[in-house]
Image (cartoon, rainbow, N blue to C red; front, top):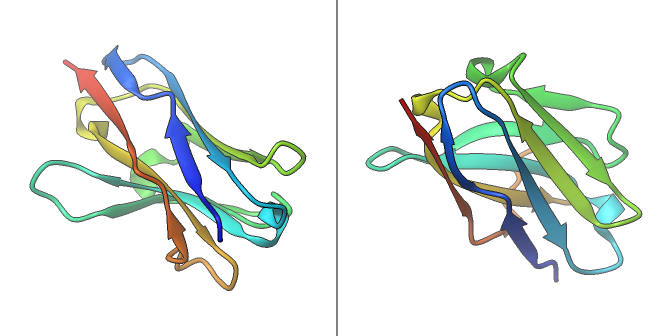
Length: 119
């Protein structure tokens, strides 16, 4: 069982930055691919970024490439999402996710953290 707790969301102006953190419980964190999804009001949940177990491979949705960076610290059971040059369309609840098998990232989910970008 893995529990995921996100933090770091908030209100920021267009062009600003935020760093989301996700703390994972358990002693098998390094065996999970990790990622971030987001869901804006009235929209479906959208994949944002993913990182492999070792951190050597990362993947991003096109809309955040060059602006967002996913990273992880396996010694601390943490995964991060550095978000720069934020836009109003980035406004959403951001969820941390884990998957031990592949990049479906549907084994475990956090409760989410709100990110609001004002124009």
